[in-house]
Image 1 (spheres, helix red, strand yellow):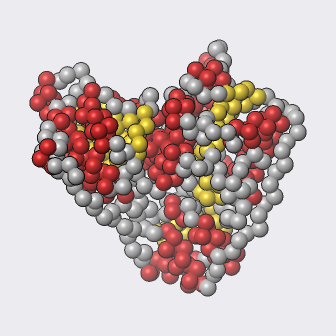
Image 2 (cartoon, rainbow, N blue to C red; image 1 turned 60 degrees about the vertical axis):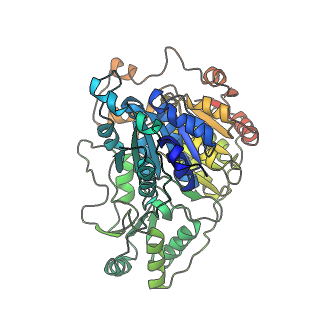
Image 3 (cartoon, helix red, strand yellow; image 1 turned 90 degrees about the vertical axis):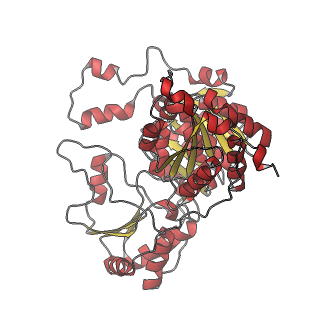
Length: 517
């Protein structure tokens, strides 16, 4: 074992995190992080994955945590690098995944001079983090990191950020710090359980999220509760992961469009929430409510985000004597015939091509709207969705999922406008030779924003519509992919999409399909 007296702060941190179970570092380092780059190289204790933009780094760490169930560490550069990572840190925080960010800062003696990259790193970190600390000595930085790791692993997952001044990393005197146990879920309230049991019946919504949707046994038990009582099951629109497909309960998500959501929820008189909050519209709209449940609906928070949702499901089932059921599987769609990529054939082409064990990363937004419904009877798969509403999550989320589950194919359903936020992720996919097949829905516009323009009562003219148009020039995703080492093809036919997607999924390494809509 390395002698603590000759170890610098950076090495003590890397060794301590490795002892704590951290296996992957997603990185976009700069000068103030070179001592950590050196420590990662010398110890060879973690897989180091380079992202060409910090938003790729944070998004990849999110995808990794969703599928691995444990945190990676990110390595970021000062306040500007942290700010670049911010959008996908926001998504990760809303997903409640575990993540530890290591953000370099200027050496303590250098801060007083207001160098060009000097900024309030703690202030920037606080916006996107649940736990923030600045290391103060080489002898205590590893302990800081281990406390941050324990905070990240607590229930629910949290975003922890440790700020590391450069001299704290390079100074000798680093000390190994042993792992700390994370905080477990808070206990359930027996009185609330009794209230929830009394509320079960027709006209009751059971809205479940978090760990419940990730456990097929829990969702099958929920399906048994619903069948016995007449309650209905739904999931939030923004979910970090759902285990779906044949043999698993099909739990629909609340629709994104506000009028559809209001209509879908209008008949409920009672709502039981399990690791979910009362559903709220993404935005405020004229003449529409912010809360989506009927005003008179009784809401019972059976399990909050900091409680054990699976235990709550078991408590409900035990109270009424319900058992898990295997719902009848929906039929799987057949491959489509040759024809243009309208929504139905597009969705059928994708749904019929999915193999068992696929991981679906969904940032499709307005295209492929029937894929989720058509895959209810597809082979068992995982479905990862946009959680915080900040677009540009799909390409990097795919990286993390593929690294966490190298034996499973990843299929990314990707809107074209959103893809451009983190298109650099393709380079990392190629460098790491990850089995990711990305389907770009090339409608050549910010179509979702066009819908929102009308939702707020606007009567848009040519200048407004021009700001939501992605033509002049057209984006060439085949050329962009090939320029970053990812083979690619352009398709305009549903049958051709099915053929190419089916083949690409089973080939090693990444592939991109530009589906022209």
